[in-house]
Length: 281
Image (tube, rainbow, N blue to C red; front, side, top):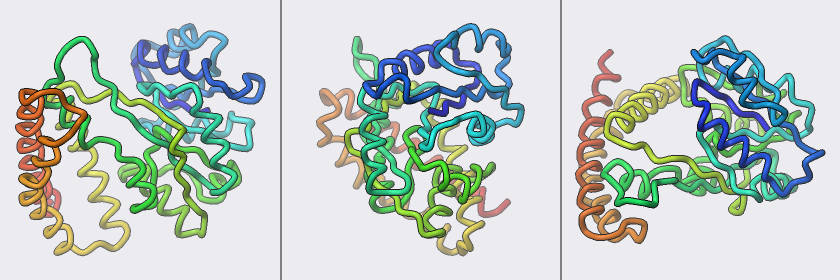
């Protein structure tokens, strides 16, 4: 199991606890943490990991390079990727490995984690409805998020490392598909990812996704007019997706739903402006 990490000891500790609680036989898996020059220092990360994981120094910035640095130290025939702020459920590895019998690489289900002791704010409500629809990503777009990706080692070797400055998960999976490898979906291999807690976190997420998505779009020969049409399609999506929020069983009460609608409007308008900025730069 490969876990990229950057300066989040609490998150990494919870992730490692979840990985140690896997039902898959403990003598048949190992955990490799690729630490991305955390300011707390490599010694602190190693001390926290203890005997649970091997920690590798990954000097090149980014989650993709951290994964790339960790892979050569893994000995298994299957590589299972998750993130240090994620909580894989106990059956994650067992179900993911089982799904590998029918595919060359697989993505599992994603859930959004929110605090249970209070009402959801706008950012959390928005994420509950729209974040991490990994089944759709796998079945319709033929990629999986790297927070929940398993692949055969020989496939990874053939496809190559994760690339930077693009949507690394989507780019790697599409590259694998172009080479003829088959992606599968593992509905019972579940990983939880925390919701973005506020607008600033959500904006930073979409700033990164927009920039990486645009770079991948251009890399794969996308036309400027198509990007422009996609950007303008964000505006009519607002009323359509407001209905989705208002009818979502994931949100409790009108207050949570209205706050999520407000965040939807703010996010789509910001993406609309940013989409034009990327096209003009």
